Amino acid sequence: MKYWKKLMQRRADQLMQEGTDDVIPYCIATGEVKKLVNFFTSRGQLKEALLVAQGACEGNINGPQITSINHAANSDNDNIEKYCGMLHRVCKELAEWYFQDGRAVLAACCHLAVDNAELAMASLIRGNELELAVCVGTVLGESASKATHYVLELLARKYMTTATCFPSVAYRDLAARLLQMIPDNEILLAKLCAFYPGSSTEINDLHEKCGLPTLQECKELAESAHAEGQIFQAVKYYLLSPEPEKALPIGIMYVKEQLSSTDWTVDSVYHILDLLSYIRTDRLILPKSSEERNELLILCGYIGALLAIGRQYSSIVPALYEYTSQLLKRREVAVPLQIEQLSIELDAWRACTQSLKSVPQVADDTSYTPPSEAQKIEYSQLLSRMREEPIKGLDGPDYVTGSNLPSHSDVQISCFTALRIQGPAFFLEDGKSAISLNDALMWAKVNPFSPLGTGIRLNPF
Image 1 (cartoon, rainbow, N blue to C red):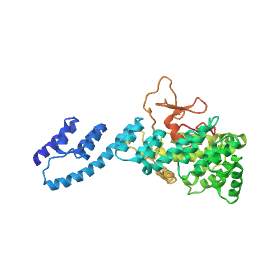
Image 2 (image 1 turned 90 degrees about the vertical axis):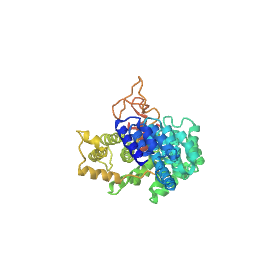
Image 3 (image 1 turned 45 degrees about the vertical axis):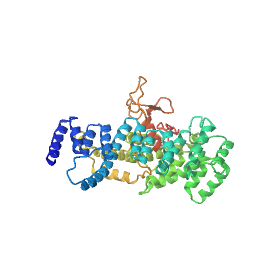
Image 4 (image 1 turned 30 degrees about the vertical axis):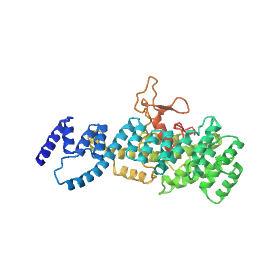
């Protein structure tokens, strides 16, 4: 029996080298599950690999019993545990294949099949299946609570539309109800109320529904907080007051002071910039606010670039650096950022991320130049400023449904890459400029303002 098994394994190895399906019965007869799974995976036959791994986990693929029955039983139990790990790996690979093919729902199904709730939710979020993600998260309960709260926040942003802001009170109230489903929602509700541009009566009505003070009370609280040096509270209450533009110089001065220090991190400035970005659009675009507006756009662009690096949004990192550099060139501002430094950081990111590619790809690329020591140090400093993402699986590019479908006769060119957009396109506020919906979603998650530099919030959700 031992000789027969050895002979079968040698024949299986021979058939594998020939790349023929004839190897399948040999591997199953001898219980060579791992070898067969790797064979299918190497050929991109992930569904077949999944079928084999699942069959092995269920105990349906057993090799010949050469040892004693008791020893064989213990060995089978050990194998089943090992096969379960293999099943998880294959499911993850199949999910990634579905996801990059623009089928986020099937990717989520693969993760749920092996009880990986976090990655299932992440697939739905990155695929912009927000309503479905809320439903799934609600059913999964505590195991997906962080992701569910994040989706509710994104979904609320979807209904916080600009341009004739909030076309109906129903949208405004829906956004409020979604945010009220999240524990510790005071700041989120404050952002909603700060962004709402209605009359004083309408705004006070919304404040009441959200459990916040009236406009006049917010003004008094802002002045008190500012006098006491409570920057975040001062910014929050000024945004909720009749004069929200007063929040801009306070918040921006704080951010500039942080960036002037040597040990600042994204976390130390992000919460203030994120709050400031919810200032009413009609107040932000006023001529008297032009200096603060320009500084806010530049700071949000730069921090957005760092967030994009941390989240591995590679397709928009160059665009964010270019956007920030162009604003620095064209507008008179006093921020602690230099165009030359931005260029150095972008070059370091490009060199170091290219060096992380697989060795064969780099070896075959004759134009490849390894990163210099200075670039490695610069990139390391960039990474040291990053914030840790609280939700597992959200790093990596977004792929919405239809991302791999060919574009039709109405060809759109991306203003980021000057290349033809494949899959859904997203038009910016001028009605002419377009970017891919994937890039628009990633941009909005790290920088709330439009790439055109107008001060309009981007809402691709």
